[in-house]
Amino acid sequence: MKNITLDITKASCFLAEGAVAAFEPKVKAAQEALENGTCPGNDFLGWLHLPSSITPAFIAELQACADVLRQNCEVIVVAGIGGSYLGARAVIEALGNSFAWLIQDKKNPTILFAGNNIGEDYLFEMTEYLKDKKFGVINISKSGTTTETALTFRLLKKQCEAQRGKEEAKKVIVAVTDAKRGAARTCADKEGYKSFIIPDNVGGRFSVLTPVGLLPIACAGFDIKALVEGAQDMEKSCGKDVPFSENLAAQYAAVRNGLYQNGKKIEVLVNYQPKLHFVSEWWKQLFGESEGKDLKGIFPASVDFTTDLHSMGQWIQEGERTIFETVISIEEPEKKLLFPNDEENLDGLNFLAGKRVDEVNKMAELGTRLAHVDGGVPNIRISVPKLNEYYLGQLIYFFEIACGISGNVLGVNPFNQPGVEAYKKNMFALLNKPGYEAESKAIKERLAKEQ
Image 1: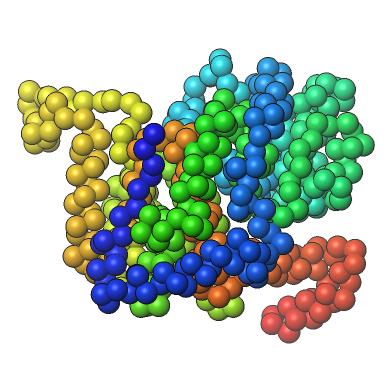
Image 2: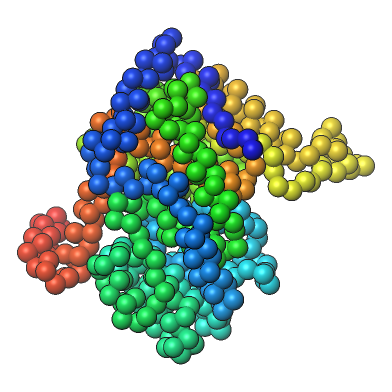
């Protein structure tokens, strides 16, 4: 079985000779700090050897629960926000039919995602859609009090019980939450829901290989055993004793930090497959929340090419030279489609007749890379043999370990997110949440002065 590969030649050429190699001791020390638990945030390192700790029995337990939901539900709603839904959605949308929302799939339930916003129209339209559906819910929340998810789960719980009856609803509502604490745990125990544990030492953005991601992915009908195997193999390939010249995660961490020190403050994750859109969304949270603190950090952005070449392409080609690109390239698509011949040839494209559409896409990718490098944009290329569960498992763990190493090299705590709490404090004060009386008074006085 081939592995994903990394090409940094078109990025390292923008650095001084030997600059990437000079990062080797820093990267090695950063990875050793992860392994030894001596880095900041060392109480959140449970993801580091998570793949190799997953047993066949645990996968079987997850699959059994997924099978119950699949057999009893037309629709399964995954309620979660941030790391509690992005990983699952990334894998499901990467592997699923692009038009699944239009197709009535007899084999697999429709997977919806909610609890990731407070849009009243969105939630109303979702509840309307579910009115005549046999639906179940996977409620993913460590605390059970995250506003977006808790609000949505309350709506879904009431509707599911009203439509299916309280006893039947218990069979199709699953909690993925803390082992002992929190509102979601209390609710699950009280109602008798099947539940899975979010490990205390795994943060949300690193949780896709826990039940947080694995259960929804299994519910969608995908092979979680293969996903885990891919992650396990990448864990071995990026181990602390693997030489720098062979360790893809170490090289990626080194070159991106080298570029950052040379004024490249924005990393743009690029794909040429629309199915990878939510892989980019997951990646943005992983790196943005891990590195963006202490007034430091590469800003993670993403584009879907070739679509965005007709919008953001101009800025990338000729805008401020503060960016670099990391391209995820899928070597072999799952399907085959040939470009047809046309007798009139009004569009002048008969020179492509008989070629695979993917060949056209690959030449667009190569042509873009050449143009962007010529325009002063360093390019990193991650090559993925096929878009399947195994290689997505590899890609997920590759980014996770690279993120942990890179954050340590940067000198931040990659595993906390104190800035995320700022908006919550203000929101609760504005909503007059009990316990926030002093904050409510202060923020209202401030707003009055600003008017």
